[in-house]
Image (cartoon, rainbow, N blue to C red; front, top):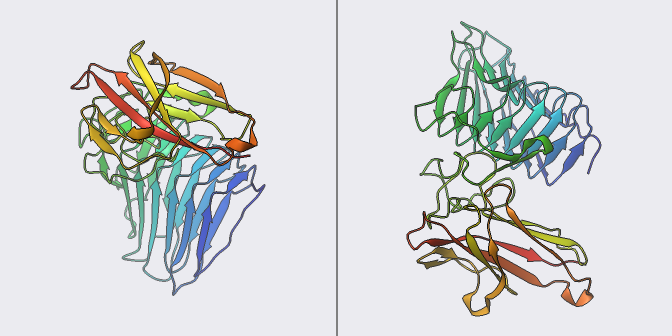
Length: 372
């Protein structure tokens, strides 16, 4: 955990992974000033909170830059969460930013601001791609503004994302539109609704006032993503996409930074600490939670969907019901016994649901390793 992290870079590559940046002026600043080389910034599995200026800043005055933000939360800032500026007046180049499985929320500025700051270089471009991300409760969700008549091009693509609750969800210069591809998105103010799988609806976040932007049961963003998505990619919580979120025994992709998980584990795994399992589904429907003292195994196809526990070691953990909001929660305390350190437990539930062909379906599975 760092109290400040400002990088000034030219013609180089910077990688940040698993960092937490708290109460910085600028969380991460990346400046490309070299005219002959392309610089790269890669940030993954990071959390940036409370920046008094920008969360992440990319300023390109050189030979082009590449930014990739993956599974990163930028929250509670006093300006923009992400600002990408293309300002090269000496040579043609491209600034390219990719945002994937990210959450940008509660900024007095924009979630994403993409800005062209030069007008005299032909073939220069700023390209921003946003996939499977959530941008909520900012000024603009995405502000992509290119002045009319400028030579450089600004293009923004937006896919499988949730952009809601901002003062203006998406903004572009009407005389020079920047959004070239928008598909399978929930955009709250209705922009692009009715085209390419886009719609406008309340996404039913769990508790946005406390920064919990997971989806609740029956959210319209569950299983309405691009059916051609890539299986196996991880969401912001580390869950592999897709998950059978509506318990119909079929897995499809969700919108936003979080794939909806009908079974959600809250635990550090520390001996003596609390463990909680959240169970989502049709209100008061029956469910059986199974556990195995083994890691998860390769998925086994069953009439009830995928089983990820080792069937030879499955035992009943609890027979109970599920909740549609709030979820049903099972709480236990992990024994404070050194003999348990290093043990691996896995959990999965079988829940009654009328949407499933056999009347019940397996939830996603979760795994926990106990640590001292």
